[in-house]
Amino acid sequence: KKYLTTEAFGRTIRYFESCDSTQFIAHELAQEGAQDGTVVVAEEQLTGKGRMARPWDSKAYKGIWMSVITRPHLTPQQAPQMTLVAAVAITRAIEEVTGLTAQIKWPNDLLINQKKITGILTELQADPDLIKSIILGIGINVNQSIEEFPDELTSIATSLKIELGQSVNRAKLIATTLKYLEEYTKLYEAHGFSPIKLLWESYSNTIGRRIRATMVNQTVEGLAIGITEEGMLELKLDDGTIYGVYSGDIEFRK
Ligand code: BTN
Image 1 (cartoon, rainbow, N blue to C red):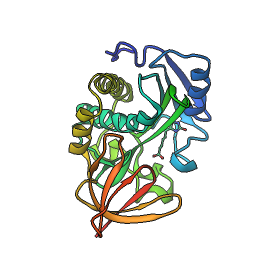
Image 2: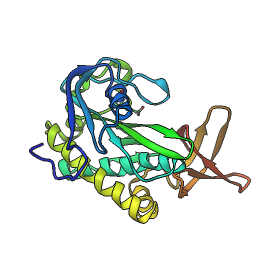
Image 3: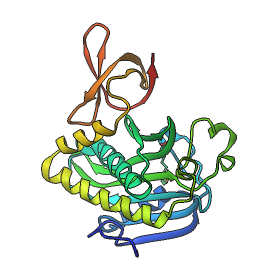
């Protein structure tokens, strides 16, 4: 709280030494009517979860494992864009606190030197036409040394400490992340997606690259030409068709 400069985000913080997943706790709190901007943060998660039901390695005292409950004035169709808002906010915060510039790989991986530094998991509580809350799950690898990652992750994950050569103050990074999350959420509510889209594109490593996108029931390949107002990735396929990728995983092609 010493570093906090926000109006709403992080004004209520629920702190845990250890928990299963901050995401589960945030869902419960949201259901009970938690305030906009309530944050759940843990030193360690025993069953941290990533996108697509993957596990998320959440070692004690090494990273930032937090979930932010937001209640933005948006339609459920606009919800995926909150992931992009979060990606831009975290990139800005990392830059301000460490001087390192992460690149955003669509939709929501932050990479430094091609390795993953941050993952974002966006989940919704909504009625068909109304968002009740969006739970932004944010995992930032901060102070792990390379030996502290499980073997299968050492070639694909990194931490701020590894990239910077020194430890990073996690409280400061949390506060700065919340500052930009609040600022960009407001910007999005007031002015729509265009300003966020510009920021996102300036940090992205995806636009202009040849991409293969794997979705639930098909795979497409083409040139990434931009993101749409809805936050979809636009691909230009070889036959010239423009194709919007709504969710899924992408892979860079030669
Ligand atoms: C991904 O890239 O797959 C998303 C990873 C999200 C991890 C964070 S850590 C805090 C929150 N609690 C969880 O269990 N997951 C998210």
